[in-house]
Length: 244
Image (cartoon, rainbow, N blue to C red; front, side):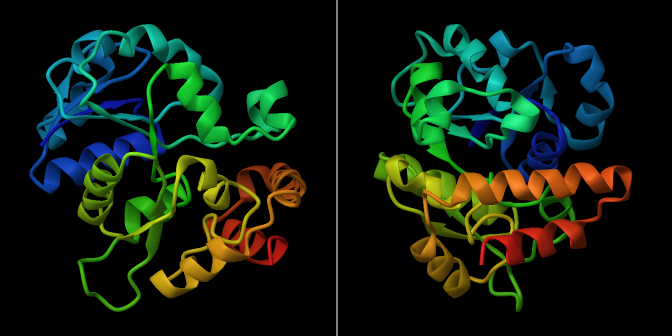
């Protein structure tokens, strides 16, 4: 499959590595230009391009950039064929991204993103810690394999993205419609807690939309206190205990 990955931060870079290893053809881009991706291109075989070039002639586009930068993607995606699937990995943290009025008033993050980019999106890879994603994927059927949920309104597009999640070393489950994608966003029991399929299904069902923003912000304050001392174990503990 031909895939464009826009953004090469922690999640984006791991997507490039895992999806090329799985046999997909990757075109990647970031905000700093293709020359900054030379080493990653040599390591993985992915093609480093400008963002405008990367989104051409692909089956799937994965946006892995900060949420507050997503409105800039609308022009990039305008005019692309309707059948091109767009997936998004972002999360909203007001303390990091700045306050977005519509989201603070309760609009579902992924529906806001879809409006900003002017395309239907599939929500995926947003409820996994960067270190977990890079180092703790396992082969299909392996004991202890972690599950990730995928949400969206296009059944076929969701099915394809779920297969890509499987290719990155995680069990994929259907997280419902885009309107239900808040269940896998920050502050919910299914967010970055390293759960099995059964555990994640239970967590998604137990999510409390009204409580999630308070939990999200409380966790972020703890993260800021720890600063450079923050570990994956700390993040797991926060996500598991604050949202329970």
